[in-house]
Image 1 (spheres, one colour):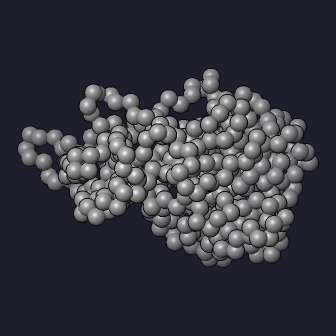
Image 2: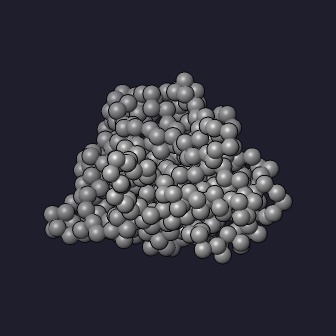
Image 3: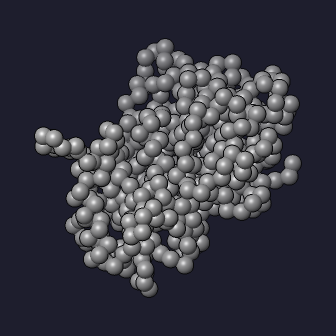
Length: 434
């Protein structure tokens, strides 16, 4: 299977979300957005201020915006969204309020021959609009290849663990007490090497497969296995952080049967990111890459300010989401960097991990080899989980500094853990955010 990398432009194939309306003539909500966009149509993402202030209701009335105490849609934001649709001849196809940013987010379809650029040029001048951008596409980055101290029968094939010195690191930490948000395809939680590791799943892709059809979860299952496959269960492989727990946020969909290639878009990723941030999960894995995206960047930056650690695939170009955002730990394939020095990215938050022919999970209790920067990002997420388990006051910057301190092409996780433990004993590196 060929590797998938960011094509860098919306002119590339956009799988778009066809919205299923719950009521005729009613605009769809986030819950009714499907996983695919019709490539013959064009879409834009627009946000409107959604004031979270709730005025005191009149006696005998019930507030409309906060059903069950949840963040809701203000009347002003709803009206602005409808008026913008009317003013610019747009069709509202999906929407939902983002508590993290205090905005209402709407996906509009351009129903005529106008270009996305033309519509955005007009929308950005409208004072009712707080953000207007293309609905962009993102891809996973894996490619499939043919095929000590653990009783897992396939451990001997996990050369990446030896390269990262994971067996020694596991004497110090196995990721206990750390929860990871995996924003990806769904995950086959019934896989025997993931039993007890998946704490929950939320889907932002409608029409997603049932557990019986989990073959569509290849990429997410592989990433989950790299991070947290159960150790010493006499089954399969060993995860880098085998005691960590994974919360799955399904935002991507598999492109074809029997391949790992998957795609997601601005809308599904924004929903997943917002949900992961609301859940207060301290570590978020993004084994994807795509164009710079203002809405997604705003959500990531909001999390960074609160000390959330993001790990993402580095797709070569420095402007690729999510590794283009300062504070995100971008991860490259160290095997590629050793063979092509020109691809080396020297940004402060850039790391590398071995990601060629790495063994991981496949749905339905199977295993296979994976390659690509998706793999590298998942491995690094596992490494970060080990470090946070040893010292939960670490920041992203301190983690990168510890992992780079050896100066070797491949990071030394055991040495970094020793530094994390020493820092905890010394009371340093308080987790104050970014």
